[in-house]
Length: 563
Figure 1: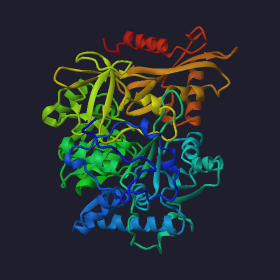
Figure 2: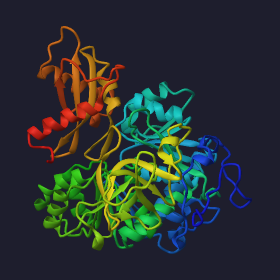
Figure 3: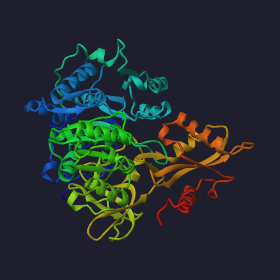
Figure 4: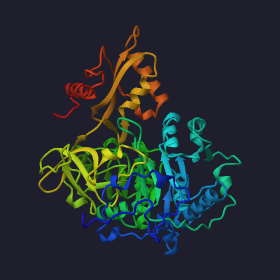
């Protein structure tokens, strides 16, 4: 395509854009260049230099431009100005390189709830030329083992409150892995290591297309996929979506609930730092806690899932959230009734958006004055989108089909054959079913795969099935999403009990607690139905489509499913 700027490919950097990575793991495990999507950088704001360390742009430049004393990150425990955060980041980067042996290109696993130290470690790893592998704080050891193995992790930084599962995962690592904790008060804790570290650190001179983040998806029908993102990608999502659609200002203060390990959540750090604004990080983000924090910190931009907005509606009268002026909704489809109710309660039009871990952040949305309630929106400036059939051919407006996207960011899986499925003819095929109307607005229909999106969390049914099957009372099972008024969808398990087992409410509760112990608690099946047989194909494969039909019918009969 004539108007698409071609990205550098591994091994073909020019002299000014040569990779700074000493550890070449990332370069070696990028997909073949012919399997990359087509990247588009035609807009002037999306032009980036060959040499770029994104932390210099997000953090260091504000100190250099006399904005260092402005507030940056805020939390109930601590707050940092841009200058103070820079000093902390520099100290951690100094320790990473000087005491922990990190070289450019090395991967560092991060594990923490949202707090200032998580922000600082994230930025420090990237500034030191490393690659962040951030993980959800609720993951169990067996779930942590996959990214540790896939990304070949030798170093992890972890909140001491999460040490139990981290130590179990460490023991299962394929090679020696050092874990440094913070918040423990121990002699070898991160705070002790940085106590005498220099607060001066020059960002490693990385190439703009050096990998700085490997973000793992939740997984759909198999193992999670590691999505590889470059330094320039961190700026691209800001210059495309945040600049052109969100349009926040330096006076704004961001707040949200998504974990920083979700790329949606990480946008709540990148977007404010892109413009020199401030942001609040919260470890606890239940509706009451989020509303109280909005009131306390006078937040002006909120970003969370539709489920959270629905939950907050019933409590909103108890708090003063008049400081809010923009609200972003993503993570799952935004129902029109939720949009209407939030508008009535606050006067604010929820800004819906769809993004993906593969493309880093939101690529379809609408500015506040262009919103059509019920529609996701139009392609973010810098991106293109269309609807295609199963063969990848364009379909006319009004036709349901697969969503295809391309722009300045795109899918590059870490050593994964599923790259061939996600990228087709240069387009990212997101796995979502959409309809585009005659005016170019995109209307969400459903997920094209087996992902269950519940309260903003992506949950793979096979993961829950595997956990259930470790219980002796379960002979067979199938897990799908079922419509739910409060959460959008819930995890529902159809269980065939083992011989001689009595299927009753007590067993259902026991299985739920079992799953919570086996995998992240938010994945547990909120509904369990015992069956005498499961629908299968002639070859013995589970027919999840039939289970979804059963769940839909059950919800419809109870009045929870849409007509």
